[in-house]
Image 1 (cartoon, rainbow, N blue to C red):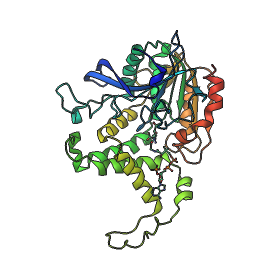
Image 2 (spheres, rainbow, N blue to C red; image 1 turned 90 degrees about the horizontal axis):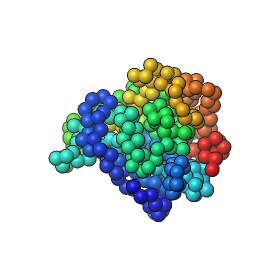
Image 3 (cartoon, helix red, strand yellow; image 1 turned 45 degrees about the vertical axis):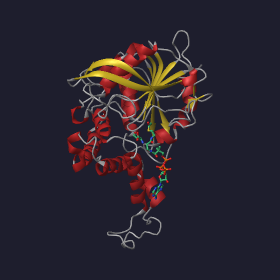
Image 4 (cartoon, protein in one colour; image 1 turned 90 degrees about the vertical axis):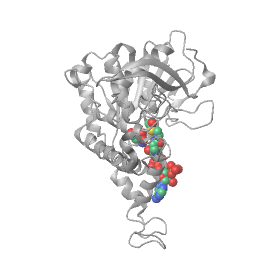
Amino acid sequence: MRQDAAVSGVLRTVAVGALQLEAGGALPEVELAFETWGTLNADASNAVLIQHALTGDTHVAQGSGDEAGWWDALVGPGKPVDTDKYFVVAANMLGGCYGSTGPSSLDPEGVPWGSRFPFVTIRDSVRAEARLADRLGIRRWHAVVGGSLGGARALEWGATYSERVRHCVVVAIGGYSTAEQIALAQAQLLAIRQDPAYNGGDYYGGPAPTAGLGLARRIAHISYRSEPELNFRFGRRGQGAENPLEAPAGAAGRGRYQVESYLDHQANKLVGRFDANSYVALTEALMSHDVGRGRGGMQRALATAKAEFFLASVNSDRLYFPEQSDELARALPGEVPVYTIDAKIGHDGFLTEIGQLGGDLRRRVFTL
Ligand SMILES: CC(=O)SCCNC(=O)CCNC(=O)[C@H](O)C(C)(C)COP(=O)(O)OP(=O)(O)OC[C@H]1O[C@@H](n2cnc3c(N)ncnc32)[C@H](O)[C@@H]1OP(=O)(O)O
Ligand SMILES: N[C@@H](CCO)C(=O)O
């Protein structure tokens, strides 16, 4: 497949064939959507795979167009992941709704998969991504990098394709989803599934389960932000002229607290840009995250990993606690430090404060 710096940050898709799935079943034809930045060098040794988080997309950095990327602080010309030197690839995860095969894609009969979309794990996604790497002529990534669900995907690359990853950068996630993370995810899944519009997942062509998806986002977003941040930002204040103890003029119910309005906004934004079935598929994939599954546990799974690992956590993260990154570090061969993103806001610090890792990443991983 031709690589061309002129198409930087432009969405493309590639067919990667049929995929047998870890938990059983198969997808007859998988397409992956991806964007690239920079130019692949002659020996294909400068390629970097960047993995998005749960509701993220392939647009990690600004490209030929002018739309901002979600890790612009890290990726771009002259940035720590310097696209004048590295060839950066970002793929939409299998099951997603930003171009890769997912529940809203059409099956071979031309009907949206909906409820028939199979359970896909992070390993399935990584296996599909390995075929994308093959198509792009990339035998070994200089680095695979990700945060949150993207970090789980990066870690799976390091364990599954040990020979194909030189540096593995895992931010704001441990080696497996814990009971609490699974529990929070279950509440989100039920919010969607119990929305009558969900219809078991077959809602395409009818009203979408926006109430359920919005509630799922509210639950998730609370976990993405720290308690002190929410308290400092919103406290007990009412939203604008709304009084939480009184009904607004002409409306049923009471006025909202500011934090309720904030969560309403976050929910509405996600509902406008994300498919509920993909939210379910990717959340279930994240629940399955366990690098040691079927490999004799985390330590044994990683004992033969050849990559150099770079781990980081957000010090105020109350979803993926820093201790879980520390535990992962201890399971890795050799001494692996865990870098700290110092952020007051919680888990989302891996998005808003990623620039803090720039210096260490330049020293340890992106040394060209
Ligand atoms: C790695 C990935 O792939 S993820 C890709 C990027 N992620 C996303 O887009 C996920 C959704 N967004 C987020 O998670 C977060 O917005 C982040 C992490 C991207 C950014 O966080 P922050 O900059 O701290 O934004 P914050 O949480 O303060 O939200 C700001 C929004 O809340 C709105 N807001 C703030 N207070 C209120 C309020 N009282 N009532 C209503 N809305 C409010 C702001 O107007 C702003 O709206 P806008 O985003 O439409 O401009
Ligand atoms: N804000 C991020 C958090 C998940 O890690 C997202 O929506 O993907």
